[in-house]
Length: 344
Image 1 (cartoon, rainbow, N blue to C red):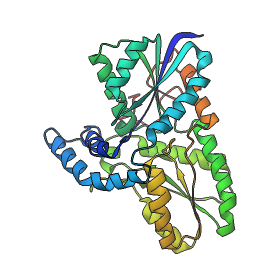
Image 2: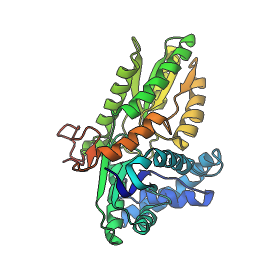
Image 3: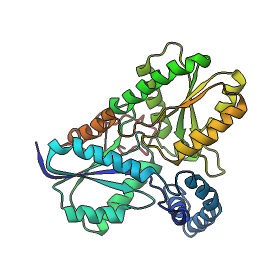
Image 4: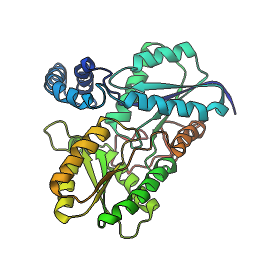
């Protein structure tokens, strides 16, 4: 079946597009009730304080990337690739990029959707694993803005695809290649690094940690490397409350103490951005050298890998006439204790 005007919305976190945008970007992030569940005006005060305190340090990170986030151009490249692959699905197919905390944000994207007047709308996260703090908050913002602007075309939504072959396959292939190279320096240890979350978020019913484990298990099984030494760890802790662990820093130090090479797999990322290009490639690489790790390598994200883009396009047809929000399996995959699963 071919649609007349198909709108595909892909979304990610977003990032500042100039040094001046760093503080307001951070404010938007920390003023999100899905991120900081404080009542107002406490959340506003917290967001104002922490965005001011962290702005200079964050600007330093972005200066290493040319003064701005690379996530938007990364996502635009994915959107362009998806637009090409999705052409057979509609007489006119357009891909819209939505960012949660910096432009183009929900208000702009919904206005663009209204102007396009699609006959069908499909919404695809660029987060393989679902969390209320990523996919959940973005979908809420999109739906709220659609209501505000009276955009009434139903949206078909994919909630997650943690074990989909289009995501797992490229990661496993990259791992096998990196493993062969690293073997010259000893038996490699593979660190699957995911963006961290506060433990309180997981305890409240968020399935993210469980889904990260499913993604990791799927990559390990697909790579099929005998006797693989691997560990899940977390990065990018922000607030002082307890976060998921172990932190990637401690695992790098442990690898140094054991004298083994490491391969870092960014298991929760599909794009390159400050957390991969600066935090992993620079800060963690330096830490590995100081800790005595004999060899450090980091797998690239899937980005515009043809298998991944083909999978995104496939989700568009997969969602047709299905009840949504929907995982890539067509049904709920998370155990019952995870009340934040959209299928609840």
